[in-house]
Image (tube, rainbow, N blue to C red; front, side, top):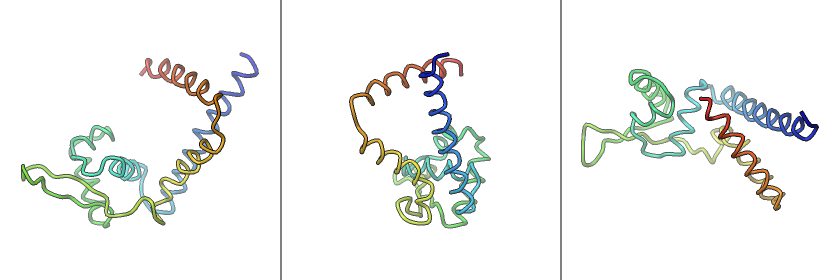
Length: 143
């Protein structure tokens, strides 16, 4: 393995570790579990998501997503709204603002990384992005 590829592997591992550490710190400060944090992030990215799609995102059972949503509704983190056209269906929304404290903790690492990338933007980033897409696709093919 070349020094360049070793350096890239180390940098990617550091990035993944830092993201994980940021999420752990955010979870602790907010008092939420890993699954709850992932649910909050998914709902933030997909406001009005149906429980069945949230279940797929989180890879949990129907009962598991119901329990999870009930718990977060009870804590005032989420709300359910009945579908206007089909009252058997509900949609899930955040009751908290992920762009404001304390919930910003779930996004702070991502926001700072995006800002750093935009500040450093260069043509070499396109090359890196292409390489990263190829190696990710190769790894994903094993899943």
